[in-house]
Length: 238
Image: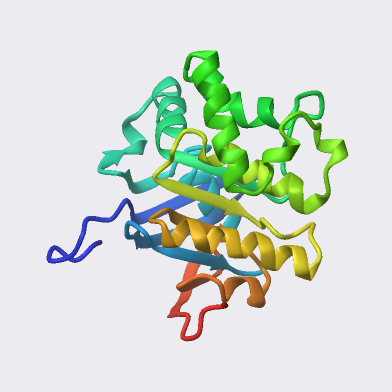
């Protein structure tokens, strides 16, 4: 749990377990995880396939619930919420960036960025302006009327990042955000994430790539559903 003398954690996991039934056996995807994420932190979660890192990200994103233990998001006990309230919490507090971008091919860049704002019921003129501002922020102001198929992989990921910022989330969750990108483009995307972190966004990123994890301030290594080690990144990437 967070130090009482420091800032309160924006995310706090306390003895969190997540188990799944697979036939007659029980799989412990998370096995007693306790971890805090302070406001403005940048954490990379690492581990082999089956280590629990993806399960943790799903829980942090309110896409799943702990089997036991407590998950507080901005002081709210997620386990106490029904599905509708979980959906509202995701929309208000969280932004998501995925390896496969998850853009809607039929929509333009502007419309993809606007999508979360549509679900929040924002006025169309206001949401169009927000989308234009965010596109400029990720250096895509001249691509607002393009569709994803007309963009490079790096440009598509920048659209996805802009979309994730449209609701001004407190926490940005990134799942292998550079997994489909070449090295040079990966560095550009990570530079953008670091810039957002420097501006105050809390970022939690799952990655299996040590060079990508170096962009974070802290690396959490997982194995068999447990935290194996936590280390501060001594020399963060430029």
